[in-house]
Length: 111
Image (cartoon, rainbow, N blue to C red; front, side):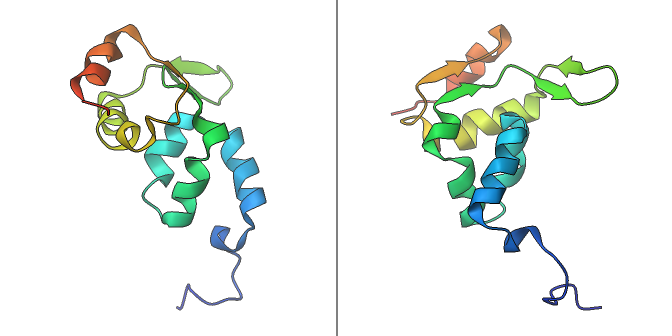
């Protein structure tokens, strides 16, 4: 079966405006961790200056009946500190983090 057939709808066929609306509805931590390495187009959408200027990486909310809130998993936090923040540090105006994330943030030397 050929999945790349143009008869099938794909998220890659959506205009940037629609993708940006979708991205804005999602948790920024999930978006950064999941979409940054998809392709260059998603990188540009995720790293939009208006979207990342006030970066809150304190929690992840599971949308469910109970609306549970969890701390960021160590691996996700490490990925954000090591791979994502160095790329966007100059665009972030406000960074909100959990107390136990300070060491991870300060470990890396951001220019």
